[in-house]
Amino acid sequence: LRERHIGVFSWIGKYSLEIYLLQNHTLANGRHLVLIRGFPRCNFIAVVVVIVLVARILYQSTTIIRQILFPNDGIRCVQQFTALTLGIMGLYVLAMVLIWADMITVGTLSTVTVVSGILLYQTVIDITGEDFSTSERPKRLQSSKGSAGSIDEKLRPESSAAKLSPPIIGTLSVFIVGLTWHTWAVSSGTSPNSPLGMACGAFVNDGIWIPVQVCSAFEKARIQIEYKSTSFYAPAECGELSESNQWAWPKTSSGCSFRYRSDIEVQRKLEGRRVMFIGDTSVRSLFFSICRFMGDLDAGGIDSSLQSHSDSLRKFGTTTIEFKWAPLSIDVVTKIKNLKSTTAMLHGSKTPPDLVLVGAGVFDKLHLALTDEDSQSERDVVTRLTAELRSLHQMDIPTVWFSPPTVNTRALNSDEKRSQMNEESIE
Image (cartoon, rainbow, N blue to C red; front, side, top):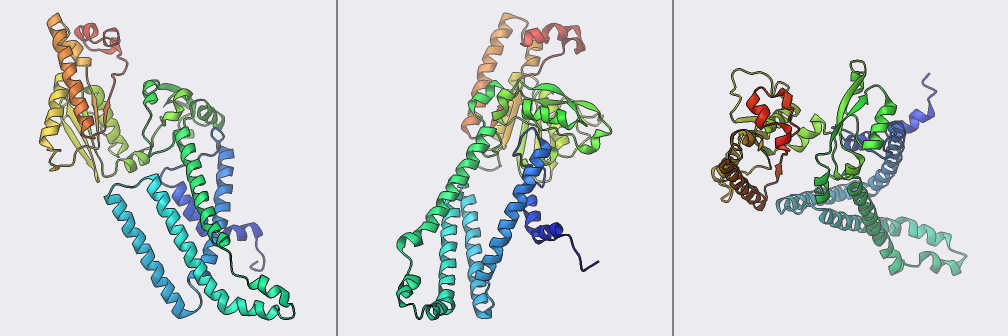
């Protein structure tokens, strides 16, 4: 049995390490690569082909580079290993400096890549040139005896154009690939580093519930094509759920990167972050939702030990999630002022929030919209609230205003609320 093998498995096994590393960097931890949207099986085949081809190229490249950088000569191997170690340490120090200087951009990364590639190319040329001079050149000279007219042609030194062509071609390749990838990411709304455009504000509240056939690959593909939304139901849930609903945005807003975020993705994006929620019960529901994404599955459940109308703070590893109870707009103004004063953000004594989500106004209709004087007071409060929100923006603190959702008037628990806080008055 050991004298025989399957050729395909042997061929794939040769590149198994490269395949594992590629899939770990592109598909692990909730990441996904979409080349053919709306056709998951075709997309799977395309991604597998790309990964296998790239793995083959990496295998061949690393084999050649290893022979060049780590030759069989022990002394030269140690020398080149030392030089390689120093080079890696230098790049690591450069990366730390760029992070410290907040210069991690596409331009700086491209520049470092091109410069490092040129230096690596020149190093390889110098090493292989020396090897050629000591081994291949005498062989070619010996083989050229008897044909003197071809000696000069075979041993003629390279021209300047021949020496400069590879670095120039490599630089252009990096530029073209990077520009193409960046353009595709921005146009498809999948770039995590680019802020959403102003036009996305017109679509952010257009989300709707759409039916999902959990066990149907055709229905999942239809949702991807019509809404550019990926079904987040796991295959194991197919036996438990035959049909469910999923929140999605119309296709017109697909370029705004509105999509479902898995719990793994949310946890990774919020690692080391401080997020603050300020507002009423609707904002508190968002606070509990984020807590459930972070791993506290009981967040928002009945807990007699906690007061319903109170502040709350939760820590999940290096992530801090805070909620400030502020049912009225004037309460939001007070909370923002307290935030700016207690954190002393101007003096840097405490890290400011990485994101502030604010929402209120529904309870204002219940308590402050009874008389003309109350209406004027409410307008004054809204003016002050606008100024406070702008002050957070001027301090470079990302701030999001949460618009009240649709009010289910019939579900309100008192006649006063149904009269003052109904959907018609809020709208």
